[in-house]
Image (cartoon, rainbow, N blue to C red; front, side):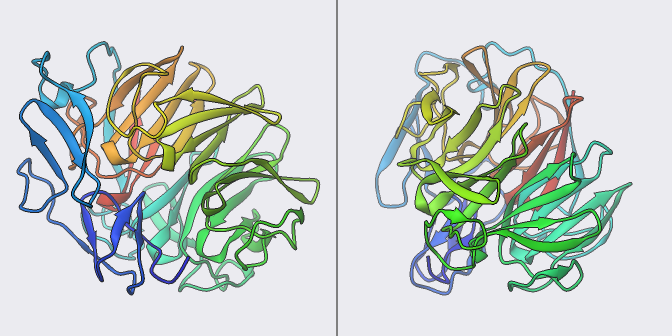
Length: 396
């Protein structure tokens, strides 16, 4: 990938004729992008999202439309779309950040600023870590205060957190057994580790692009965007641009899942199974050993449809979080601006509707291109609401 590979979100146009594709500006330009005005329900001229009669559709940016859902037999309003059979309850609140105001400001949570946050993790003590991607920093939220935990400008350097450098950090995973935070350092093509004493080391990867397995200090990745730690302490990586899942165990890197179209989310369940969002294919998989099973979503059919897992549709799902007590898998369905739930082979919309911003009851809340999600043992869901540049909490 070139220098033009920069994060973006749905309803956003990249400069230099770049397209916002699966959450990233792509092309040969300078990689910058321009925010659109906040979505107010009106369809601006040239916007890729539109409705045509009774058919909801989404443009692919190249003059084509992809069918989302036939609304002809439904009298559902926007807030009820794909939410026919839900009994979910909860409240959404903004934890930190200024809505629609990207920046890099520490301090009180309601005054702090983020820029395209693309990773979130929560410790058992309730400390929230954020991969503040466009600021190249790892941020910390504790007791209502946001601080910079590690990183500053874009670069690649290990050492004490105040001097360490990252480049477009994305997915995060906190390991309570070692009290270490793992970071998918995307543009450095590496997995980084921050220990409890705030020392940053390169856990795997050389910084070069590649797909080499072997000793973790010599292995190579290609834009890794998410990371997870399983019940055995192994580290799993969504190696997006290699179209692979990788496992780091015993000092070695192994390729364990191949031909997965741009995987961008990875997590695990208590059984040790690995769950992944195949973002480029708009579906989810479950892997046990080397066996990969299709779990939910119609492959290569982006859309919005709730129902039986094999019939459900997603649009660029980018993050997963498993809640073991209820057996629920939460999905950041980025292109649909929603958080979805998979449970008992049924996919349902948990929260969200059209792109926007609103806190409050689940039926009223709005998100804009949420990219990352995590869930606590108590069922509190934290979301990196990337397009709104804020961190949200969904309390049961």
